Length: 296
Ligand code: PHE
Ligand code: CA
Ligand code: ZN
Ligand code: ZN
Ligand code: ZN
Image (cartoon, rainbow, N blue to C red; front, side, top):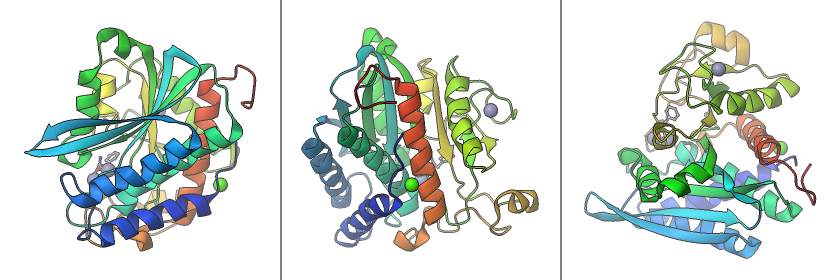
């Protein structure tokens, strides 16, 4: 897998910050900063050779949008999806929540294109609308699929908050080995968690499990029986003294600007953003498999 350039990921976050600043300070569902964010991401994916679809849905009297980007090739009946919500809350620009996952996934998608990856599995990236209003975009997407289309999605990777300023390195506990949250996910979730864990082991960074309870866009996927996993660096919760020993930082909130106006470009831990972007690339390359060509 390639080493993702954190400077390139950060450049996308700078663009998302500018979009918010130019549109009343946020990128929320139903507000102009949301559609401008979709247009920014879509333009880069189209230019890179993805097949993109802007899916509309209605929530709360406003039109919402999911952006779906398919990388041509691979076995479409064995599709790996990679997603992040692109909307912010109305209170602020949403750069950690969830510019971070959106930008990291975007740069991994662009790396897939640059490397000419010919994966065994089909790859489909998604940027979800209206997560902050109750997983509305991801739910609309899963509900829009026929049972055959649903069965063709054999895994889903979710990235929501991956650069918290006082970060932890949490993996959705798909195998329930940490006994957190709602217990083991659909069979196959353990493999996803273990793949992400293997990357962090390789760089010597410890991880811990976090609730696999559906508090982000993987919820509708696991509810449909689709294996899922992901990384989370923490939100309003406080880092414990034991976690400070493990990861450094301070015994305060993982993200004191969670859902606030101060979730700006200044609210990003660059080391976490770099490690997690590289972990996403590793998981995509590993789980997608190689069918010859650029992948390893
Ligand atoms: N989905 C939450 C939000 O957007 C953040 C979150 C992500 C919480 C992952 C738990 C796990 O506000
Ligand atoms: Ca990197
Ligand atoms: Zn979020
Ligand atoms: Zn949020
Ligand atoms: Zn686990």
